[in-house]
Structure formats: C-alpha cells, structure tokens
Length: 249
Image (cartoon, rainbow, N blue to C red; front, side, top):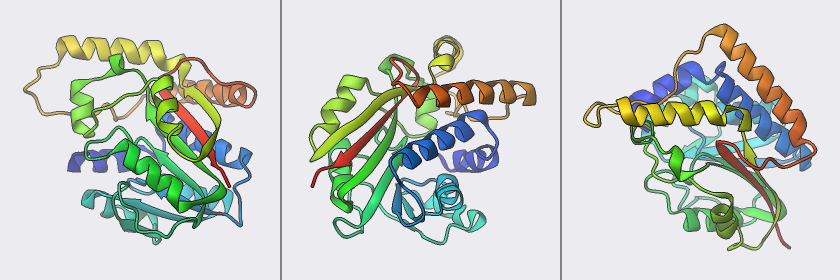
C-alpha cells in the first residue's frame, strides 16, 4: 500500500465495521478448526498487526507475523506486535512444518506477490494436518482503479480460479465460501460510480475512511447475521472469498 494508507488503516481498522467483521469471521474460522491456546499461528502479510494482536488475545494462540512493507513495521510497536518481522510471502523465513495454522488475508492480489509461489510457501511452513485460511477479493468487475492503485493490488478472484490455485498443493479443501453478500450491491454501485466520476490522473486513494456511527452499527449487525449463517452453510456470492484448506499428511 501507499505509505499514507497504512496510517489510515491504523486509524480506522479497530472500529470500522468491515475490519472488525473480517477479523471476527477469521477468528470464528480458526476456532471451528480447533486452533486455540496450544497452537502456533502465522499471519502472512500482517499489515499493522491488528489481526495478529487479536489472535493472541482472543484465541490465546502463539502468533508470529510478517509483512513485506517497511511502512507496516512503523505501526508494530504501537500494536505491541513483538513477534513480527519483515519478509516476503514469496519466500518465508521459516522452517517447513512449523505452524499449526497460517492465515493470509488480502495478500494474494497484491503487486509483487506470486500467488502460486506464495501458496507453495504457505503449504511448506504448515505442518501435516495443519490449516491455511485465505481471504481474497472477489470478481474482476469490482476492480476500482483508484482504490486498487492505492493499496497496490491488481487481482480479484472467482471461486473456480481460487479452487484451481488451491488444488495445486497437497491439501484438502475444507471450505470455499464468499463473504459479505449483503454488502455486494452497495459495493458494486460505489465501484461503478467511481469508474464514472474519478479522474484517472488524480492521486489514488483507498475506500478506507470514517463511517457514521449509526451506519457502522447497522453494518456490524448485518455481519453478525452472516457469521451465524456461515456456521451452517457456504455463501454463493459476496465481495470476498474465504478458503480453508488442510494440509495432507
């Protein structure tokens, strides 16, 4: 991401409905797969360290994170992220079979990331029987030039594309579901309007920003409903895709 986007992310991710909802969904996923106090978890592409902090606080897990951006490292002391380092998802500085679980949220779409190589590395560092939980943005038609240039991302995925990538590793696919289906119409409308109204020569800016408190509460309740639904079923559409795979013995 652009340097100033990390400051914006740090300011808003603790309370913004999208970030709080996504972290809650990831924690639900890890709990359902048996990740807890005795587990060693990797956060591959940990950003400012918020999910890293919450996995330790909410699950009691031992957590290690890394990110390739020097701008992200500036925020780790503020988060108390003492078990984070700078590294590339394409070449992780860890031994094979070390981690019980690895999470990788909104990384495989980024510039400089080789999705196939990064996925092989995730498979390598997770032990046999361990899990990998991935989140990627969905649908190429949701691409926004301003937002994606600001966060240095170029890819969006369909479920068949992601399934094809996952099938290249020694894993069993446990879940493959969309996320945020209730927000898809609003996100699509905003992206369509941006394509019409944004000057391509203007400075790129992400969509991260303040939300009115009442709207934040409404969105948080909608995500709460989605979390309950995801306990029983995979969702056929939405603005993101969650995949959970288990490494074979």
